[in-house]
Every structure is written in C-alpha cells, then in structure tokens.
Image 1 (tube, rainbow, N blue to C red):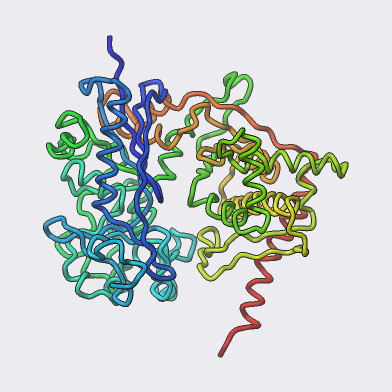
Image 2: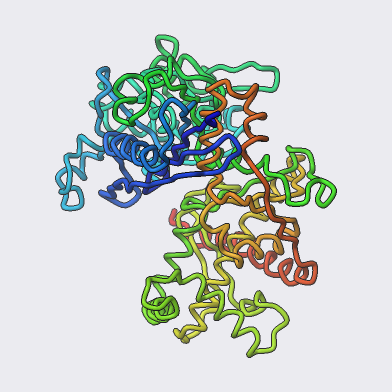
Length: 532
C-alpha cells in the first residue's frame, strides 16, 4: 500500500523552500529557489508577490519530480511565510508600495516599481506611525506587551494611508504573506488566525471569541478597513491546518504538477511552523529518560535569518581578519568553500586550551556585545535601539575575530534570556527549549543557549522542522489525521537532549548583568543626547 505524503512550503526572507514529507515526518526530497529583495532607501525593504509565487510553483514542481511520488499520493500541502504585507487591487494585481521619492532611483533600476507590492517584515518605514499607535495607550496593546512594533501590520497600513494615497485607494486586498499564498493556491480569501492575532491585533480569547477590534482600528484612523465586514483584511478567519476553499485551483495545480483539489491547509507564520514541526518531538529514550513538561512550559527557538544569521554574518564579514579566516576555512575543507563557523569554533577551542581556561566561554569575559543593530523587536519593541560593543582593542587578528564571534553568540543567548525573564514576570514558566533552523546545527550556538538559560535543549533529529511544520498543515487539511495534534505526534519524530553546564552558570549570570546594564546605559545615552 502506497504511503501518503504531504508537501511543506516555507517562504523565508530570501528564499522559498519545499519538501515532500512522509506520514512519519521523514523528508524524502527538498529544493529551494531564491527570491528578490529591493532596498530603495534606508528602512525600506520590498518584494514582489509575482516573483515569490513563481518561485513557489517552481520549487514545488521540482521537489515533486525529485521525490518520484505519484501526485495521487500527495494528500495535502501547507504553507508558511514571513509576516510581510501584500497589497493587491480588485483584479488581484500588484499595487505598488514603493515610496514616491525612491521611484526611478538607481537602486530601483532593475525592475518596474509596480512589481513591488510587498512591504517586508523587516521594513522600518512606519516608525512615526508606530509611535502614534503606542501613544493611544489602547487596551489592545496589552496583547502585544504594551508596545506595538513597527514591524506589525497596523503601523505599515497607516503609513500607506498617509503616504501613498493612490495605492491606498487602489488596494482591494491586504494579505499577510502566508494568507496570500493560500489565496493564490485556492482562490479563497480566508485568513489564518495565527497571522491575524500575531501581526494584525485581531482579537481571540480562550472562550472561542474572535473578531476585529473595531474600537482599536477606529482609534488609529484605519476604520475604513472595517467596511463591508472587513473584506479587505479578512472576513473568514480559520485556524492553521483547516482546509482552505476547495483545495488547489486549476492554475495552481497545473503549475505545481499536482492534482486539482489537493487539500490546502490554512497557513501559518514561518516561525510558528517551526513550532509545529518540533514541539511534539520526543527525546531519544522516551519519557523514562527525560519526562517532558506540559506543552505550555516548552519554548521553541527558530534559529533562522530573522533571529540571528544576519547579525553573526555581519560581525564576522565586517572584521578586518575575515578574508584571512575565510581562506583558512576553504583550505581546511580542501579547496571547497567551508563554513567559517566550524573553523571559528575549532579556533576558540584551541585558544582556550592555549590559555588554560576552564571553558571556551571565558575567552569573551572582557568583550561584551549588545546585538540589536536593527532595533529590538522583543521584549522592548523599540526600533531605536542600536548595537553596542564594549572591550575593543587595536587587535584585528584571527583571535580577535573569533572572540567577537563568541561574544555575539553569547549576546544572542542573553537576549533570549531577557525575553524569558519578561515571560516569567507575566506568569509563564519555561522548562525546556526546542531549537531548529540553520544555527541549531552550530554546537557553540546550541550549547551557549543551554548554559546561559540553564535549561535543557532538545534538537529534533529531522533538521528541517519548519518544512515538517508546514507539511503538518497539509496533513491536517487532508483529514488523514483527526487533529493537528495527531499529525504532530506522527510527524515530529525524536530529538537529542543537550544539557546545560551548571559550572558555567555563575559566569553567564555576570555577563547577563552586563548585558542588561548595556540596555540601561543606552537609554541614558539617548536621554543625555536628546535634542530639545
């Protein structure tokens, strides 16, 4: 009997990935396609929905062909994506979100600005709008920690209304990118409860009540989005994994090489897809070896682009010793481009042994980094925060590069600890960390987080948890499982446990105090330099 398979599609910041996944969560084929990003001006990051959808259909067709699975046995497909904002007109065509003063600029010469109908998640144009929304002190802000980030959709929508009135008038659909994907796949305009609650200030409670917060949208000047039963931003709202429309429409099925009507699960935010793909993971050896806490006490770190890759790569590649380090890394990999993180980890071990230090972490005892070079999303929700370095010398050799890399990894872990501390204040308990994404393959990154947080880390044996998570959505929509939880239990598999080092707790407690002091100091510096 042929086994059922599901397709997971993950639209990240710079690429689209897809995988064919079996009922037991094993990935049998995967592929990826790059997508374009335009940066016409500081704080403006744009994409094209046409470019992204073309990449989606291509990568799905490729992965289906690679798998050799007959399309009759592809029982469902699920999508996840970044929380970027897509704007379309009444015919489903792109509406430009390109700022007027950037149109025709040299940085936009490679395309027609009309193509750019996506304001990316990392776009920071709406700083003033976010300040205005937060100044209202509306009760709705309590659901986002008291401050709304400029990366959420209401500030961006308000920016569009204020700055691009022609585009605002033309717009008929405002989609979160995950919902755009299910619309293109099925022609259903239903929205995901995940996207709306996380990024649109949509109200949902434990009693099953859910609705647009009309008072909030009126207070911030976006009441026109509520007209016609909020048709522009979502009338039908569904939980992730719920079947979308009638499944794949003819055009999408043809482009992907799949059957019309193949079930499509309601989408999810990319990081949340990683949660679906790994939070049900069982530690190797079973509960007798490591009893898992209640699911509400499990935290998942999705270690991809938006969390840490950009910061680490920037600090490595901007260092004067980077070229020398890259050459050595390539040489160690026998002429093939080698991942520099591996070499840096090896060099750090060597330096610690040469200096007779008890732990590698102590190499960065005098080097402190605050990593919010592009503002802070959580827990401060403050886009004005800047990166900081303390402990710099005139040295620019390989050792200095390695220690800066180590201090950066530590800083990212301290940032996670800051978030958990704020969660504890709000009454939450975190007892175990699940980790997936690119940097979960880096032992220094994983072990540092375990040590800094003082918590065990579980690494799923299937490394592509985000793709498994989006495939879970397709499996849920297929009705092969009774619930999304059943699909997760079948597909999440096992994981390895990384335990924290109690011997390093005191060292990291001290460095974490410095980290928190750097936050306080930065606010003091801002106050000192305030221009009246």
